[in-house]
Length: 324
Image (cartoon, rainbow, N blue to C red):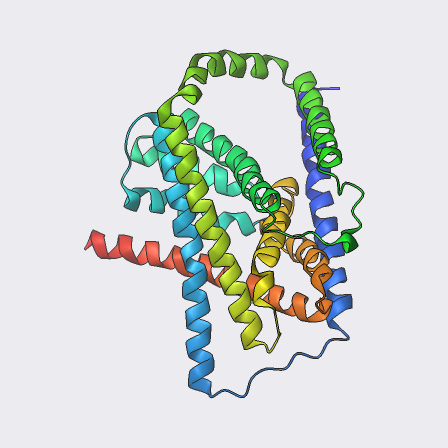
């Protein structure tokens, strides 16, 4: 059978698997919420409008922070500077495509828009790959640090088969190994070409410049970590959901751990539903009601989507203003 046809079948299966996971996640959330009564505070219309605008604005910061991170990676790969304004135009405009089926079109969008600013497909593709690698390892370093220094408490009720860090590493390495083997079988020539290129650029990853890049990336991830935690707690307060401040790190770590679902379920648009299901399953172990946590997470998702949309319109408005 032709390799192209096989890859098309794998892509088809992955897409429908993503749809299936999304459907199951929505069913899980619905089964929790159908027996949950959500109480809203007795505020005036003006206060509700203010809160909505505030949370939309707060969530619109995330794409701009992500742009800072991607800008650093692109400059490292391309060994030249890019204006933050131009980086926003590339990243934020294409970021909205992550909500389309497949959850990969944002990367294609960066290549299409980035070429207009003089960047090559190779540089843009490499920056996206490096971004995914950092998205895998930097949050892991943060979570591991919080756990090692006993800032993140993992309750015994987690009941995960891979509770042990060694078991988790084993399953991750095994899964990645199988995927790499399949990819190598059907894309052998392409991988050999990549390895030759990696051999040429590998010394770059042993420089002070790369060390500084990782340090900045970790700081941006920490900033995002705390912003997400604060937003979650504020929304919970607005929905009359009582959270213990002592659980701030625990809940924020749970949210960060659940965000891996966006990477490992590429067929799910923006990780919608899957991330909320995993977050609920993790956070309820700290003694909270699953219905209340799910309602807060759904509100967070709604404001996150509105934040991405508002960031997109901010960039479009800025571009329109500059064109006058």
